[in-house]
Image (cartoon, rainbow, N blue to C red; front, side):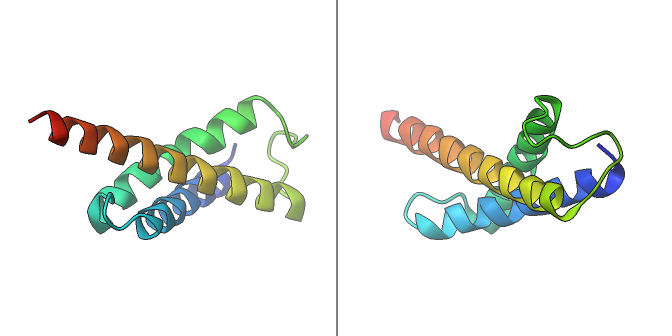
Amino acid sequence: MDIMGIITSLLSGVAGGNVAGLAMPEKGLGVVGNSIAGLLGGGAGGLILNALNLFGQKAGEMDVGSIFANIGSAGVGGAILTVVVSLIKNALQKKS
């Protein structure tokens, strides 16, 4: 994955994390928390799906399909990690 792919994954993850936070405002992590969780989830999601070669992208090749696949996978990865972190945070708060 080249630098543009990594940047696309990170930004898509931030967007996915914030969308997930807006979808569940009572359980969200706040704008900064959603952005950080989305950034980490987007980076991980983009790298994992690229490593699995699910979209048939060759090294260094960026076409429209692979860009959309990268955006989608990173956005979903960011959203999933944001939801998981917020559920863990809320479960820990209930124990206290």
